[in-house]
Image 1 (cartoon, rainbow, N blue to C red):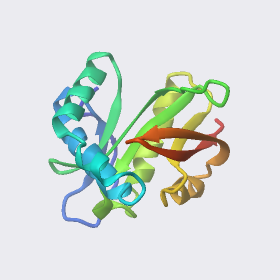
Image 2 (cartoon, rainbow, N blue to C red; image 1 turned 120 degrees about the vertical axis):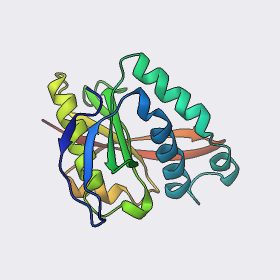
Image 3 (cartoon, rainbow, N blue to C red; image 1 turned 180 degrees about the vertical axis):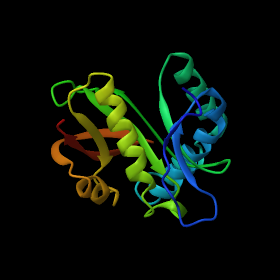
Length: 178
């Protein structure tokens, strides 16, 4: 349910960090973290003009539609400020796992403080609670965040090539068996 607290994770700032289930009222904050994280994380990996065109309003609309369609997400919030987001659902490649974390982003300034781990754990638990066997995550092969997933025990199980912003990029799939 929106606003319910899942973990009292503590940051090094003065406000406590809370991992909680997100709802429609979080759509604007989720869109900001999503767009800002893409711009921070993928600078130099994806075309600059593609990243510059990412639109907060369009992503807010997307997240409102996601919640209206009974999709789910978690946010990491320090006071009223959302600093991380995560979401998942049915895996797109069922031959690898039945659950997938589609989105897991933490603002660059807040990385390295356990926030990503808290969001990952919330999603992993939610997928298991919904009866999914295994959890899959796809990450760009050029993204240093791959080390985060490896540190969490993800096993590299697949590769894929896709087009983003007119550029072909390689992604790597990591799996956690339950």
